[in-house]
Length: 139
Image (cartoon, rainbow, N blue to C red; front, top):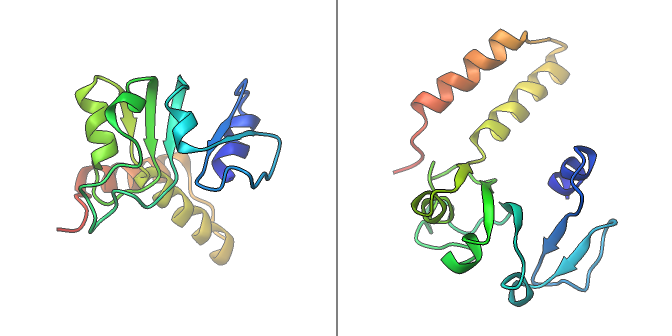
């Protein structure tokens, strides 16, 4: 639900959560199931499931017809760097991002909290760039 809160806080006009258990509502968002998703389109499609993550790299939580209905794709997983979900999006010319920046950002924030240390913006960007350039995922 953190991503739904973030999107709402950033001014998203609507956030729809797709779940196998769409009847469970938590928060002010619209809830639908995967069958109903096929009727939707929007700006962002975010995968918050582990589907497509190593070692099950040949799976995507949704198919190409659903992905085609959205402009931007974010996969919260980071291993592999390009999941099947993102690969389909890339082949359709969509803008895609994996979860590596989120993972590194959470690690940096944890160090700041637990070690009472503050990183400068330049240090954060340097760390992020290091992982962006060197992360290939498990093989």
